[in-house]
Length: 279
Image (cartoon, rainbow, N blue to C red; front, side):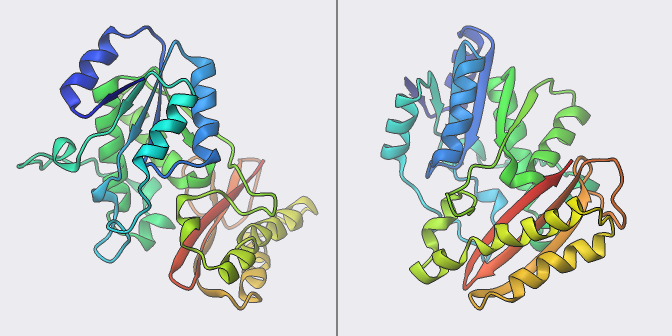
């Protein structure tokens, strides 16, 4: 496994390496969710690359960039055990050198939910992913469904800019009690961790109602919200939204199109996001 820290060297190696090349972009602090992506990428491709980069431009001024979990040595051990060929682990100044001033501005797909709650977040996500794509030119790139709106933003950017990458979405990996794996779960206190599965239970409550034939989005949202509000450890609910699973456009009535019900909820200062797709 080679660890590369400069854009120029990564590009040169990716041009020479056997194809197809699969890329797994990460911010490190790897868990089984990330490893499910690397396992699929390893199975699908002649060369498997991963990136470890805590991207400063997708964090807001009052968010957790400085305290975001970082575990480079452990992450490299895990990636090596997965059979990773190339790891791109640049410093911020390498990705955003002095004078950097070009950004990807995603459109309507990024306006609601996380886009509304975290202004500028998806500009940072889209820009860094576009850079990763043009540095490595992967044949395939792998992302988790837990960040459902992020995947939609990346898919739209990839299509609109003709980047030609096959964007592969992998299922959310969960703890046995339903909590979606996330690097930020490390912030939870024992009491918060015990309560955290309520986020998934809330989504499942709406999903169960949908399975009975309910198609009114307001009623489905209300079912999820009621579960969240009944949990004392939930300090705030940023949103419960029901959207078109591809475009992220809000839905009033669900039809034959795949829909996504998504939520962001806070347990103290810890913010958890999750979603389920209604097919």
